[in-house]
View 1 (cartoon, rainbow, N blue to C red):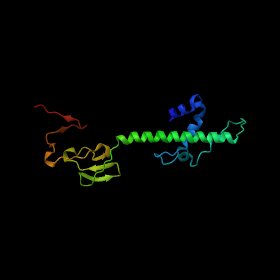
View 2: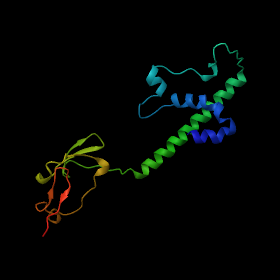
View 3: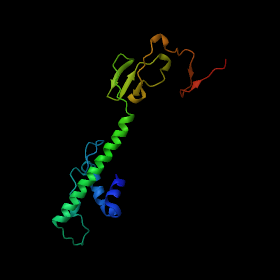
View 4: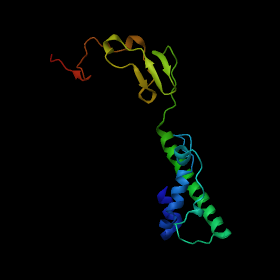
Length: 163
């Protein structure tokens, strides 16, 4: 996002950092379901047009306010574009998987985790798994590998026995 602002504003990008910070802090974040400023202080932040150092006299005309508002809109559009681009990258790696109770699945825990039915040999393994760590198995039951000859230590490392 900062790179996009540096490209847009050229050599004067440093002067626009307060506007970038303002836009970031007042833009909706899906992770916290609010804007960071509103989540922290419980209210919206006032426009940065009125920010001035104490004792510093500033005359604000409608042109400055319009220019600042345009830049804030431009920054918010860049932020949204960066967010959409990141989402598209994440969606490429995301697998839409759903399992049904009965597919060796005991219980669905939310939309992203499942409690599985594991064989008694794997009783030391926790039986709840995140959905991206699972794959559907299309093998027949007789083709399953018996776990009788496999031995694991307390850290679940495979122990090989010499023949």
